[in-house]
Amino acid sequence: MELLNGKEISGQKREELSAEIKMLKEDGITPGLAVILVGDHPASRSYVLSKQRTCKELGMHSILTELPDTISEDELLSAIETFNRDHDVDGILVQLPLPSHISERKVIEAIAPHKDVDGFHPLNAGKLATGEPTFVPCTPLGILEMLKTKDISIRGKQVVVVGRSNIVGKPVGQLLLSEDATVTYCHSKTENLAAHTKQADILIAAAGRAKLVSKEMVKEGAIVIDVGMNKVDGKLCGDVDFEAVKEVAGMITPVPGGVGPMTITMLMNNTVLSAKRRKAFKGAV
Ligand SMILES: Nc1nc(=O)c2c([nH]1)NC[C@@H]1CN(c3ccc(C(=O)N[C@@H](CCC(=O)O)C(=O)O)cc3)C=[N+]21
Image 1 (cartoon, rainbow, N blue to C red):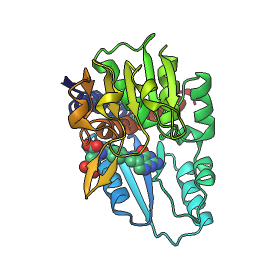
Image 2: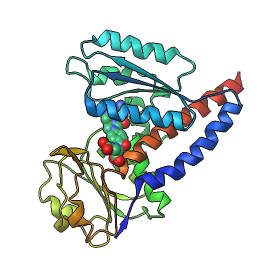
Image 3: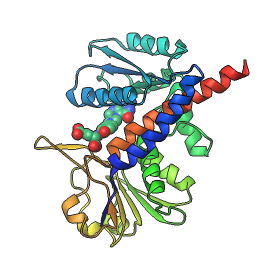
Image 4: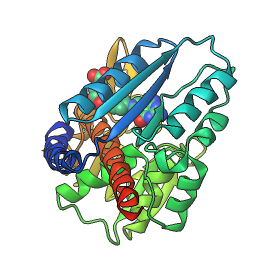
């Protein structure tokens, strides 16, 4: 078994990004990311701070707007609109989840699609589905980056995705389909889950259920990617029973230190991509 070390793979990618950022800055463009955090959920705050720290480390410009959870939907929408108009902001991220009185759909649709570095806007989701170049959600992109860095072949391989969320499950399947994988989606209503997961050359667990994937569900030598972020007894725990599954998997991502760091790196990647488009546009006028 080989460990797929997200921290290490992230480090290489961050060096590449840092060089690109340096070049953009020489041309007078500093990639800028605006993050909006509503409320003070401790986990959300810690993720957001980690995004801010990474921006700083890479020499990017970062803005954090913190709003109380009593804010109205309209006030949040107008904060987004301000960043839509701000020419120094290349990427806008509204940290999810949002308080229940605010519609996530409306908020995501308010972000200008060309600044939607999360890739959550329906226009960008549609482009991913039709195979047009677009902002791809950061976790799926991070998973692809890991597989490519490790020279893991995707073409013709059986990929099984457990989970069908709009932010991970659905887009990761579409992304790997565009890389010529054969993709199966499983979810909470799937009958005989293990029969499907046993077929996987690449198994992606993104269901949000601690230790859902047991050793019996994994084929010998499979690549196992764990997207789970569950809190169990105050400890972070993936969707895969790591200690057992590592005995059969060919490669496996740990939690923490696997997909999480890759997600943040690809958020930086998408913001740099957006800044490069800004530069191309600036060059054209
Ligand atoms: N609009 C929006 N975009 C997001 O991308 C988004 C979001 N909302 N809401 C919440 C989720 C969660 N998420 C994580 C990213 C990195 C780690 C991460 O780096 N985790 C580390 C450490 C975690 C720890 O130790 O607590 C690791 O896995 O090694 C975790 C979680 C992004 N999200």
